[in-house]
Length: 114
Image 1 (cartoon, helix red, strand yellow):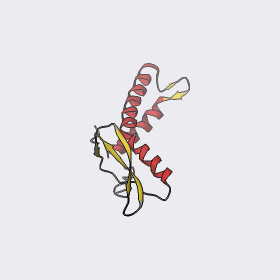
Image 2 (spheres, rainbow, N blue to C red):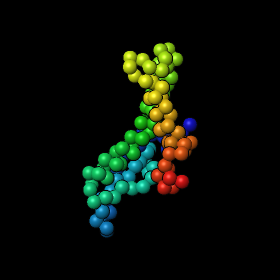
Image 3 (cartoon, rainbow, N blue to C red):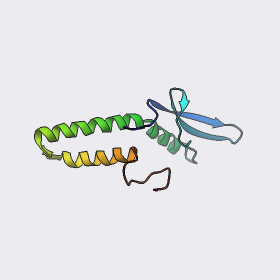
């Protein structure tokens, strides 16, 4: 089970008039989610990054649901159904969810891969 801040999350634009900087933060239930703010020379890139991270809780829930769908298809029809390898899909989803939950050797962005 993931211990992330419950969603929904939203991307919020901020402006520092002293430094003349525009950036994006992630908020949940009117509180900032502990993550890095996004400052970049490309404001569209910062906005896209913030939106992607804001969607993380929904994407996590979707991945968990898809894992269940794969398990049901495999249980009912076998590993490959209509030419789709559900075992491979389930394996990839499991890798992603394990990385999110810190249970894999996937690179941890907070520690540089440690």
